[in-house]
Amino acid sequence: MRIGFRTIAIAVIVVLVLLGGLWWRATWVVDHLLHTDAPKAIAEKSGDVYRLDVGRVRFNPLRRRIAVDSVHLSTNDEVNARRPRPRTALRLQFHQCTIAGMHLFAIIAGRGLVAASFGCADVTAAAQVPPPLPVEGNEPDTAIAPSSARQTFYIIQQGMRLPKFAPRLQVARIDFPHAALDLRLSWARKAAARFQLEHLEWHMTDFTLDPKDSLATSRPLFSRTVKVAAESFLARPDSESAVHIAAFTANLPDSSIEIQGIAFAPTISDSAFAWARPYRRSLLKGAVGRIAVRGLEWGALALGEGVRARMLQVDSLRLDVLSDRRRPANPTRRVRRTPQQWFADLERNVSIDSVLLQRSEIAYRERRPRHRKAGVLTFARLNAVAVNVRHAAGPRRAATPVTLGATTYLQNVGRLDARFEVPLDALGFDMRFNGSLGPMPATSLNAFIAETFAVRLAKGQVVGISFDANVRRGVARGVAVPRYKDLSIEVTGRGATGVLGQGGVIGGAARGIATVVGNATELRGDNPADGETEPRRGPINHTFTPDQTLPRFLWVSLRGGLMAVLQK
Image 1: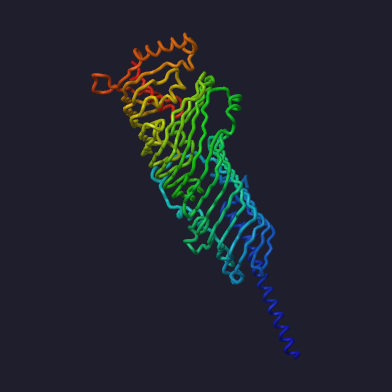
Image 2: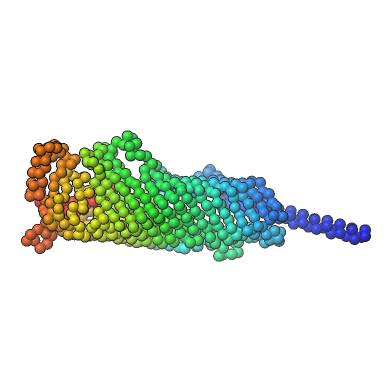
């Protein structure tokens, strides 16, 4: 009996020692991975720019889980500032994290850390993307040459090394259900954009970090699926405007983004702006039902190589532009950017195969002194397709232009087809535009004319309008051909000064006389006129000024050609 009891006691002691050794081994592996190897790998991979600090780690082998109080990733600003190309400044904080469903024997046998899940109760992240460095030059065929997202992520993730005692990290699911992100994007011109996501969710599946597995290494963030979702957050593209977004979803392996419920408007009210800047101004408000991006190269975006995508789709855009001309002109004119300048100011490469705009509407409103309401030009049922949207950061050069074809209905009545060709990397403001407007009642334009001028169209029919112009170094030259019949005006006097703006019998008589004289001596009622076989053609000749927006430049260019025909 003594021999049997002694044998059992020895066996129990051996088992306890063995279990203790196995527990110590597993604990040592986990502790060494989190407190030594992970911080070392982050520092080496970032060139000592980033520092990883892991808080208290509690290992429970019976429940096969690890509890981590906190994980902090910070940026060494001094080291980062000395780099030829500074990295994005990061501050990441993970709290109450748990690794569950661990395979203990895989850890003990030195096969790596394998677990069912990893998650944190609370995650906060702040990132500030530095301005890009000045670009001396890009090769046209490589600056925006497409490459797969898988290849780009492989460039980012290659060279990752793991210790011999844990040659593989594998987690079936990673979840951060409560995360907040503050992203700031800086530009070389000292402007900045800010995106604040307060309700962010991050989900990943089949995370596998194995240097021997090239397929896993090339996956975005080493995972089979990576999905990021956010609801109701705010973005500030500049200091004077804000964008509210209802929902955002990004899928890295699918190279896609979907944004829904977008509303953008100035951050300051119109009355407050009038007090602060009592000059003429344009007020832009709008909404977008949905934006979808397909074929987006996340890796190129992360590497600072710019935006590369296969398709950008914009659905249900509603844009409202108000030009308030009741205020005096600003003695210091605001400088507006041409399409070439706008893309140059992005300071990053852009390569998008196609842009699709559908089911949209744009309204231009102009408010004049002594008018009760703004005149409105509406471009309804707007659909457009742009192809070959290409821009290379750096010195400008001749390149294949982006082509844009659009179809819309002016005042929701007359069909307008237009085509634009814009070389985005041209040295100056160059473009070509042409198009045609179909039949519509001339009186449909009174929603704009009657509230903008002191006249209204009494009758008339627009048969059609065609136009074609080239813009070279900011000068538009071309021709506009309006075809119409039975056009006549009525002087309303609205907004006019002097006798035309007076009420009563005298004012009414003056407006009646002005109507008769205007129709008889100033307005050409038909084009082509009786006896003419060809319509008159109006020359387009207008020079861009830095205070003009692109829509106003196009409108003034066309207006000059049209008025040359309308006026006798």
